[in-house]
Amino acid sequence: MQSHPDWRPTASFEALKLRAELLARTRLFFAEQAVLEVDTPALSRAASTDPALASFSTVYNGPGPAGADLYLHTSPEFPMKRLLAAGSGSIYQLCKVFRDGEFGARHNPEFTLLEWYRTGFDHLDLMDEVERFLTTVLAGIAPPDSVHHWTYRELFLEYAGIDPFTATSDELRTLLLTRYNIHCETLSADDMDGWLDLVMTHVIEPRLGSGLVFVRDYPASQAALSRLCTGNPPVAARFEVYLNGIELANGFYELADAVEQRARFEKERARRAVDGLADVCVDEYLLSALESGLPDCAGVALGVDRLVMIACGAESLHEVLAFPFDAC
Amino acid sequence: MASYSTNEFKGGLKIMIDGDPCAIIENEFVKPGKGQAFVRAKIRNLKSGRVVERTYKSGESVEAADVMDVNLQYLYADGEFWHFMDPKSYEQLAASAEAVGDAVKWLKEQDTCEVTLWNGTPLAVTPPNFVMLTVTDTDPGLRGDTSGGGGKPATLETGAVVRVPLFIEIGETLKIDTRTGEYVGRSKD
Image (cartoon, rainbow over all chains, first blue to last red):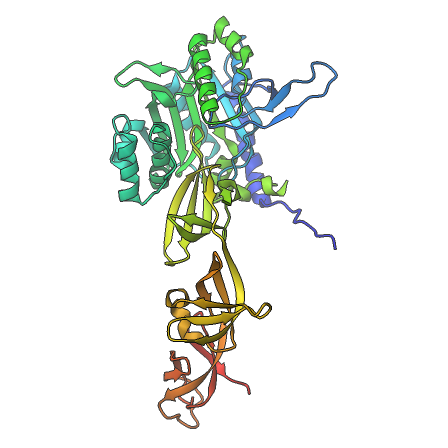
C-alpha cells in the first residue's frame, strides 16, 4: 500500500500572511530610505571559507562555462560588495540562502535572509538603523518592549560573571561545569572561540529575555568580515542583534582591506584543513573588487524566518515556514 | 565499535556516557550565526535513571550503547536474582535487584515484562501496564459499601500495598495500573 505523506503546509495561513506583511513593510522601509533592492546569484564558483559554514555544492553541465563545482551561497555578501565597489550606493536584498548541516527549531538548511549595506555608515550608525527597521516593521504586531546595548565583554560579565578577553578555556570549562552544569567534553582547550560560543549559546542567550539586545565589540578572533578597532585588546567592529532572546542579525563595519581579507580567507582555509573540512576556493571577484576600492560601509544580515517566528510568538520555524526541510 | 554521529540523534537513541548506557530524551541544534554548532541533549542514564545534559560539537561521533528492549516472561525469584525467559527461544536470563528496581512489587509469575538488555544482560525491567493480583491482607470488607469513598490499604500477593475501596476482601483479584500504583477494578472472572 502506498503511504501518503502529509503534504499540507506546517505553517498556518495566518503566519504566511504575517510573513507577506513583514516583507511588504521591509520593501517599503527601504524604498523610503532610497536603498536600492538588488538581486545577486545564489550560485557561485567560490564559497565561504568560514569553517563554521558548510556550503551545498552542485555542478553545471553546460553549455557555456561548464565543469566547475558551484556552490549555493550561504549569504549574498560577496556579490553585494562587488556592487558596492562598482558604485551602487546603499543596497538591500531579500533572498534564500543555503547552509548544510543546520536543522532544528531555529535552523533550516535554506532560509530567507535580508541583507543590507549602507555606504557612509559605520556599525554604530547601522545598529541605530536596525533598531528603526525593527520598530517600524513590527509596529502594531510585536514591537520590541525594550532596547539594551552591551559590549561583548559587559554581556559576559553581567550574565556569566566572566571576562571573555582574559578568561582561559579551562576557566570557561570549569565555570560551565560547576555553575551551569554544562558538559562539553570534546571541545578542545585551544578552541577559545568555541568555548565562548558555548557560553553565549548555553548560558547567555537563554537568559536574555524579551526585548531588543545589541551586542558589539566582539573579540578580534571573531571579526569574520568586519574591520578591527585599535584598542587594548583590539575588538571587532561587529554587532549581533537578539530579539526576545533569539539571535536575529549580525552586522559589520565592513573590512575593505583586500590584503587583510585575503589573509583571513587563507587563515580560514588552513583551519578547515586542520578540522578535516572540504577545501574551498576564495572569491577572487570579491578580492579584486576590494582592491579597486570598497566604499566605507556597514552591512547587516537578518534572518527573516526568525523575524516572522518572533512576530508570531512561535517557538519553531516549523510554525512559520510553509514547507520546512523535512517536508520539502 | 559502533557509534552515532550527532546528526543521527533523536529521542530513544542509546549511547554510552562515562561508561554507562543512556537514552536520549530530546536533543536541540544550537548554533550562533558565526561560530561553532552544538547539539545539546537531555539524556537518561539507564542504570541510575538520572537525567543529565550533555553538549556535543555538531557532527562528532558518540559511542553507541548495545541496548535493546525485549519482551520476556517472568519465571521466579531465587532470593538473589529474578529469572526471565524468552518465550520463543526459551533462553533464560537473570536480572539483579538493581535491574528489577521498583518493578519487583508488580512481578507475578508468567507475566510478560519489557526487559531492557545492555550487552545481553538485563539492565531494567518494566512490568506490564496492568497486572492482576490477589489480595492477601486487608481490613474486613464493609458489605453494601460500593462507593469506594475513603478506601483502605490492601496487601497484594507480590507484597505491594495499594489503596482499595472499602468493599474489597481478602482473596479477591484486582486489576492494578503499575504506572501509577493505583487500583483500577475487580477481576471480571
